[in-house]
Amino acid sequence: MYTNNSGNSSEGEVEVKRLFIGAGCNRIVNNVSWGACDLVSSVLKMPLLFSAPRSPSLSISSLKFFTVILCSNFFHFFQQFLEQTAQILTTLPGHKASINCTHWIPSNKFAFRAKYLEQHFLLSGDADGAIILWELSLANKKWRQVLQLPKSHKKGVTCINGIMVSQTEAIFASTSSDGAVYIWELILPPSTGGEWKFSCDAFITSYNLNMRMFSLLVLVIVVKCDQKFVTQFIHACELKAHTDWIRSLDFSLPIFMDGEANSILLVSSSQDKGIRIWKMALRGSIASDEGTCKKEEISLASYIEGPVLVTGSSSYQISLESLLIGHEDWVYSVEWQPPSTASAEGTTYHQPQSILSASMDKTMMIWQPERKTGIWMNVVTVGELSHSALGFYGGHWSSDGKAILAHGYGGAFHMWKNVGVNMDNWQPEKVPSGHFAGVTDIAWAMSSEYILSVSHDQTTRIFAPWKNEASSPNRESWHEIARPQIHGHDINCVSIIQGKGNHRFVSGADEKVSRVFEAPLSFLKTLNHATSHRSTSPEASK
Image (cartoon, rainbow, N blue to C red; front, side, top):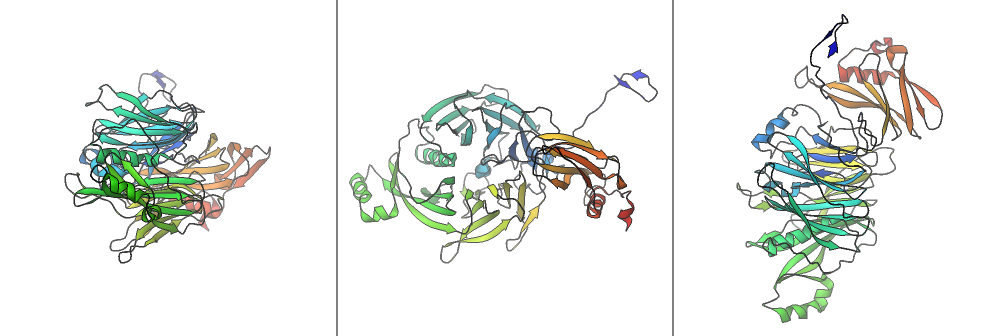
């Protein structure tokens, strides 16, 4: 029922269409994941314009250049956004506490195997210890909450990592600040709407780990144990080199020589500002040469090289491959470039020798070995120049290796794309943005040209429709165009007031002082350029 202009009531339907979602990223590691479907997931306590005060959201960003490995039944979903800038597509409410971490299954590390999958899955863990599994159907682009795992962790979930062993089976691990690691096995239904089965197959206590190390366990199981899941874990070895907290670990996929996986590379980063690359080389079968293995384990050469890791009937010699020095602050994240498909069937892959690191010194670096000497060098450095006291909490590759993404202290994303042809040329790209804390008030401009919002992240932001002249002139998307106030207190309220050019507002914060702001000429020019509207201010024509 609606009322028309004459005051008469009549039957009819009112269509409400969502045009814009603005959200930032939490100040926490492990909360951003880039999936094989080229969607970026991030978490936030309270998104802009959402009413649930404690309902976290999952923001999914579709980026205009991520179209390289998309399968045909998913391409149209991205096609409608190709000529637009990055947009947040949807939010997934369901958690009752702040979300600490997310992880895609399959992840971008296994994108070369994901081209024929009809569903992709997302795991999210929150501060109450709950883990939720979400499903994305590529056929209809619909999300649904599949199940919530039994609450096993006594404290918040800090990290989730796992892989798909087959098209119907996934293995993942979860860690918590309670010092426990749980290993889960998930059986996927063969068809949509089938029965899901899951079980906790292992429990490790007295550890508080970054579970990227779990990828080693899975790789060893898949390669050497014929995909049989091992439910008993023993302490195998220790790698001692870092002098401060280890913040990130990532394993490459097995490196094959003569058809056999003979080595795996591990990269680690620490608060000691250093990055170390470890090599796990296959030594041979224990059953065939047990006495020799025991002798080598206590030799001087073995001591210099590092410990020996025994798995099944094989043993691996671990050695320090390289030490990478270049960052000036804590290195929070390291990640191998995702492998690329080396065959049309997607059964084989090529593992690039390229590492992305993100640091609190506000930079990301790409490391590669020199062709002649094999010495690992910093070949690309990108970063941010700002007043922020802290830098990047994590860095991530796109599944095709042509873009990199960082998220930082201010809840913002930073993205660079390699647009070079014969040589690398990394250029910054547009990304979605928004508040990273609770939004306390909003106000429309009197001319409805933009919306003004304030938040407990101590900022005032202006969002406006951005008309993209490169595409259809009638197509527009909303973006943050200005941040007129960065305060030292949480801002609670805002109101647009009558002023010259209708661009004046007053805000109130916890300091119990109201502050009035008036738009400068530079903002009026930015607004005119973004919205293609001519400002009513006399100063705009000067």
